[in-house]
Amino acid sequence: MHAQLRHDPARGAGHGVIEIRTFEGRETDILFSLRRASDGKYLGSGDWLEAEQRLAPDMLQYQGEVLRLLIGPAVVDMMDALNTFAITIYPADGEGRRCGLDIGDLVYSKLAGGQGIVQTANAPLSMSPMPEMRFDPAPQPEPEPAPSPPPAAEPEPQLPELKDPVERKNKTPLILLLLVLACAAGGAYWWKFVQTPESAPPAAKVTAPAPSAASEPPTPAPRDAPAPAKVLPPLQRARELLRTGITPEQAVALAKDMRTSEGADGAFLLLEDAAQKGSPEGMLGLARFYDPADAEPKGSIRPDPAQAYDWYSKAKDKGQGAADDKLKALRAWAETEKDREPQAKNLLDSWK
Image 1: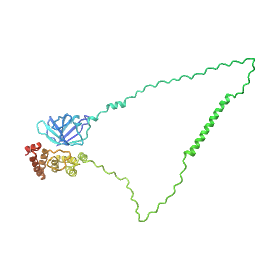
Image 2: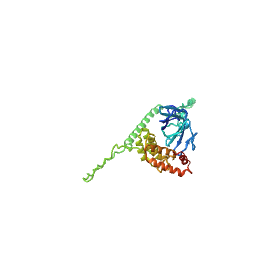
Image 3: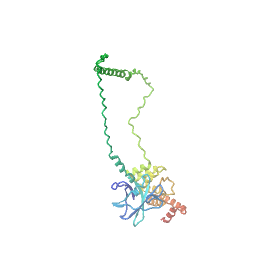
Image 4: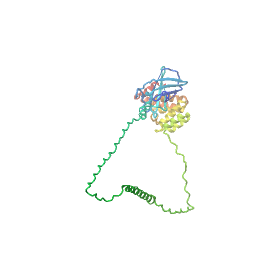
């Protein structure tokens, strides 16, 4: 059984579909729970809780061997693609079945807004009309009173001869023309002698020394060298490989290289996929992640003795001899921790 959560484009932002492949049964009343691997908490009503909470999907559908659970923002907005999750399916009449949940591309409901911004950006601008400018006519000078004629008895005084005002007006354009010619001559002088820089003297010719016979020619720099390939983080690389398709043997081989403190989460996803596809070595590696007695790096995966027992048993049935030794070590751990660890006591009570 393998599960994947992806965006539901038919219902819009905040909605998703959980697809469970190779699901056996046709139940019409199904509940499910989601467990976060980083802290072991279960998704509840708007938060992650210590106790397991069973949730109901908005709708469920069947397509061949695929069970589709339609969920809404209450679940989608709480899922983080950088974490690791497990899902448990609870039919109406039957025991719960658990498997890993792969997170695909999601569209959260919190990013679906923006209508107010669009309306503000498209609103027409209101511009008040400018007041009409009015100009008052220039005041007209009052006419001068006509001079009174001189008395007839007195002789008319001799006034100095005045030049004709028309002659003075004719001289004004000539002065303006002279000013324009002077400005043009000054601009030409500035452009020729001030603005245009003097030409620089020709550079002296430098003769390079002849290369000696012993000197080697310089190695030309490589042109059009390819850029170095971008190295993805282990967890993102594992998700890309699972999305594009990978065989169980390849997944197990890559998981061995990633089984470090930095790449443990990526190795877990690869081993989980290989185990779900029936790889005995993948089952053994997945059980070691859940085994509290195993000392290998576990990343954000919480120990789960019951899961470790189930996968060790399946690997043993597939012919993995190392699984028998791991089961003995797990039972010894449970015997030691039964008085302090409830999971150890529960494991011993259900040990077959």
